Length: 346
Image 1 (tube, one colour):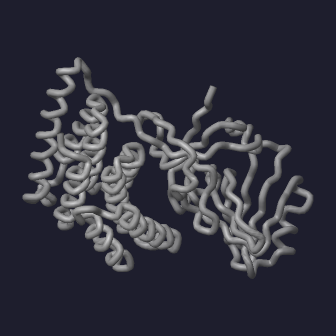
Image 2: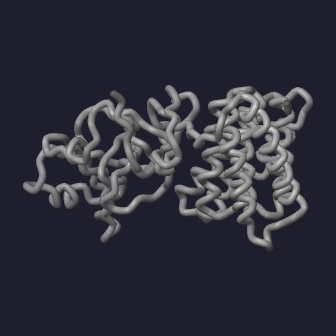
Image 3: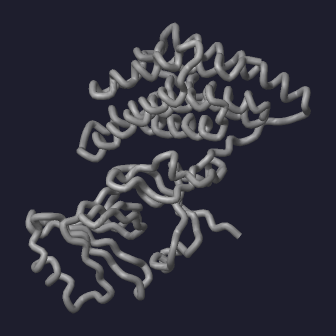
């Protein structure tokens, strides 16, 4: 069997080789990317160091996303960094995190139609589950990798994509043989969804230190979620979201007015993460603010007012119309992601 280090090296090498069919990395992360790749390629890699470079890149990409950068380039770069993180955790034999990051990479790249890299992400999942000798799930991932690269446009085909396709077929044959010997069949790929205790204050992103556990869901049931948060309280009860539920969140920097979103409110006194129905008011610069609506009439609604806004005029908009209002002054709001579903544990 290919060792976990060899599997990691192969994924990293394909990332390097597929540069011609990949979106360009923003210049601000190119140096960190090169250092992470070089660290992975060492005979005895410092995995923590490589992961640190990747986390720096993720932080930069999240800031670019929040500042209105080119979403296509940012998502494509984020997908590549996710695959690299998957390879790093594969090298550390942390199968759960490896599978999670490969899956995250596949989802980000699928939305932007980068099929060669998407196929590589599924291939990474296949090699990860192969290390666990979990043949049915490994086979499912391998087949998704093959189906994806078969759909590659002619203009994106290269010697490297042909080699990747050949390797996928080889692994499918290997895993099929192992599966037959053990009397197993292919299965759908459960996606590990991290359940986080909190969103990183100030940034509105998840960090590994805040991951409490992983929830495994079939792709059809996760709705493209990147992470989950455990709901506290009943402020969203009328929307069907109850205390103790796990709200599934797709990480994205923008949502439509009226959608339920996970957001972080930053004030001089600190940061707070909430799940509310999102409304943005920006008709006039001095009146710009956010209204975060609870679905339970007995719960507080939140009004987030940035610095420089006319506080008295904004408060007058709500006077006599709504009760249970809480105002956040001189505040900044960061959207973490869109609510896409829930899991209710028995």
